[in-house]
Every structure is written in C-alpha cells, then in structure tokens.
Amino acid sequence: MTLEEAKEQVTIHILWNQLGLSGKPRPNMRSPFRKDRNASFSVYRNGKRFKDFATGEGGDVIDFLKLATGLDTKEACKRLLEIAGNVPQNLKPIFKAQVVEEKRELVFPSFLECTKEFVEDLSQIRNLNEQAVRTANERGFLFSTEWKGQKSWLLTDSERINAQIRRMDDLLWEEVESKSWTIKGSSASWPIGIKEASKFQKIVFTEGAPDFLAAFHFIDIEDKLEEVAPVCIFGAKQRIHSNALQFFSGKQVRIIHHVDEAGYEAAELWEEQISQAGGNVTCFDLSGLIKADGSPVKDLNDLTSIHADCFEGDRDLWEVMP
Image 1 (cartoon, rainbow, N blue to C red):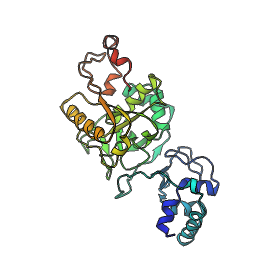
Image 2 (image 1 turned 90 degrees about the horizontal axis):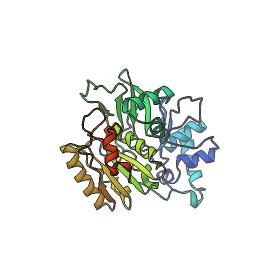
Image 3 (image 1 turned 90 degrees about the vertical axis):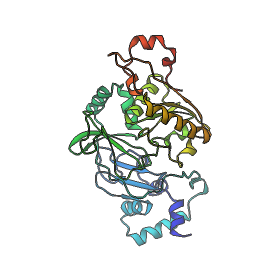
Image 4 (image 1 turned 30 degrees about the horizontal axis):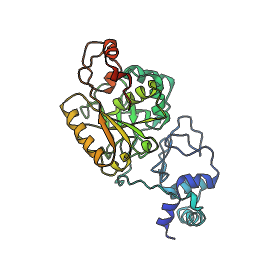
C-alpha cells in the first residue's frame, strides 16, 4: 500500500479512535491536545483535514498523527501505513464527496467564544430568535470573530473552502465597499451547508449569510430542525458549483430568493441547475409583502419583521419551510 492510499483509507476520525482521544471529532470543538475554552479546533473535509485556529496548527492526517503522538514525519508515515493495513472494512470510508479541489488553505481569523452576549446581540441585529443563532453555531456554521479590528460574525461550513465575514454593527467594510467580506481564496460558488444537508430530505436554499441565519429562525419556529436543512450561496451572481449539484439529487428543495431582478434571474438559474441534478425544486416568492415599518420585504431575513396583517392574510406564510 502506498502512502497516498493509506491517507485515503485512514481518516482523522479513525486515528481519533485508535489513539483513544476524548470527545468526538467535529467541525467546531475544543482541542483534544490542550485546554481550550473557545472551541477553536476543527476536523473537516470528511476527516481529511484539521485546524487549530488558536495555535495555527493544522494539516492532513499525517500532521494530525504527528501532533497527537510527537512522532517525526518519517515515523508518522510508517505508523499510518501500519494503521491503514489494520483498518476493519466496515470502518473504511464508503462515502467520498467530490468537492472543490483545494488550491490554498483559507486564512481564517481566530474563532472566539460564542458568548451569551454574542448570541443576544446578533439575534437583535438580525431580528432572529436566539435559538436560531445558537443552532447555527452548534452545527459548525456560525462563529464569533474579530476582523480588521471589528467585532464580527463569520459563516462557513465543514468544507472550509468558502467563508464570509460581516460586521456586528452591520456597517460596510470600507476596504471592499460591501457589508460582506468573502475570505480570499474562497470558492464562492460552493453552497454553504450542502454537505451537512446530505442527511436531510428537505433543503431551503437561500442567498447570503443573513438569509441563511433567517432560515434557521423559521425552521426553528416551525419546529423542523430535524427535517429541513438550510443551504446558502453567497450572491445572486454565483452558479452552484458543479461538484455540489450531486448533493441535491432526490431532495425536496425550496429556493427563497431576493425580491429584485438579480434575485429572480438567479432563482431561475438555480432552479434549472438543481432540477437537472435530480432535485424536486420550487421557488417561494416574497414579493408584495410588507414589514412592520411599512417597507417592502426584500429577502428572507426581512420576513422576520413582517407586518402582522400580512402574516394573518397570507396562509402561505404559516409554513415558510418546505
């Protein structure tokens, strides 16, 4: 067996069990190697990669084995080959996702503790219930951070190939003249949460980070956290990446697009892509709805501020999720 074959056979999850490490490897967790109050350790890419955002350590299964055992590279490679030769058949990876080829490691800021204050502040800023914010964090999508000296929130997923940061005060980043800052090197067409949605039959597909959190808001209040998975793409100009389309096959998908020309054009494109991939897809139109302050609803996050008369008069709004 070659070293590359061994790296395909042995995931960090398998090493974790072999080494008797405490806890369970997840995209958002505390480090097993040091005292970690802020859950700054991440195992991602189906157990192929890890990253400690506090120390900067990270890499593949070889790097993980070196960190866990103190072995040098040569001895760690030898140990991995030995482990690969003894992995039971039922533990070998049977599901290999085709994801975007990694051109570079994204440089993430430090992930800070998702405090009660952070949850309360972001919930208030985006007009969301606090459970929606907590759930997004617990499932490894939402993180508290600091970027360019500003308290911020970051959205990514277990693939760690696409990530976007927004300020907590919801103001523009002057450097990029936008409220959202996509981390350099991101594969912007990769839909956040699509791999995590594989165990769900129903998907709500949204545009942008605020609508992704708003999806959690409506999924929670409709008591469907175990039924519906939110997925989002960062912008109406993005086509769904071809390697992500496979995950829509056989799913019931509801697209909730922005109420503008770009949003309608994007929804038409996404509907065609998902349908061709084998998904059962419909679009949910928010046009004509009014917020409590009298302004029009333009996206799913706006819908959390809907006027009571609109809600009472439109039965479709009583079940926004699929």
